Length: 239
Ligand code: XBP
Ligand code: MG
Image (cartoon, rainbow, N blue to C red; front, side, top):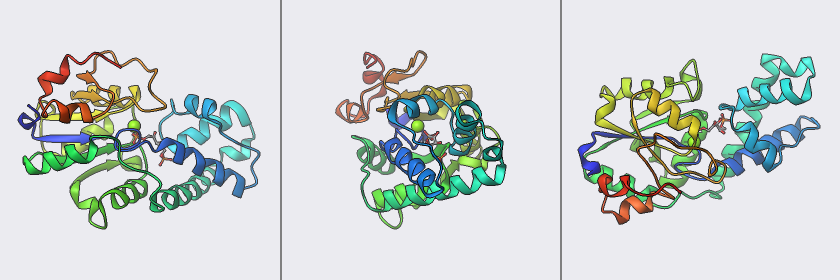
């Protein structure tokens, strides 16, 4: 049973909600505002998502597709990414995004069962706050006393840093926790931190290979239907 775990450590983008189309729109709006001739369509963004972190993703795009040296300036990228974050949080504040199936129920069940909640994400803290407030109201951030996000760690996913930081703040052993992820980068990060990882692939990660995952489910509604019994979903055939 999930109640045997002392904490759940949630990824954000793709796991709590299908957010990447909003991120993609925010990137493209920031590029347009800066009069840059860049547009990331879905196919290109699916490739670029292999690079975690918005600033790192922009840098990779400049190095691989734009080539203009002045676009590699750290300050240029930071300012462009800050504009992107402004657009993204505005999209989230508008209420356009909703939690994925089963997420709200699992969070409620965990709270009722005394299971602690944490976040380990590559996205920016401002984006986490926007999503939690939009989904749970003004006190949404209080649901997750432990939040490891974005630039809090030196190396982004698939490095284990952000999950190790969440475990440090929780002061728990990996075996006492369960990670919830949507991407192979995220799964590798969590597993490298020693965590069992339950994967619910998202729109952009559906074709990825989740070999080694604790379980691969279409969404967390399956876990609720299994009455929160992890042993029952463990045999669930990968999507
Ligand atoms: C997914 C990411 C993030 C988002 C964009 O994070 O890799 O970079 O795509 O957000 P998660 P930023 O670990 O939650 O799946 O532009 O703030 O990085
Ligand atoms: Mg994710």
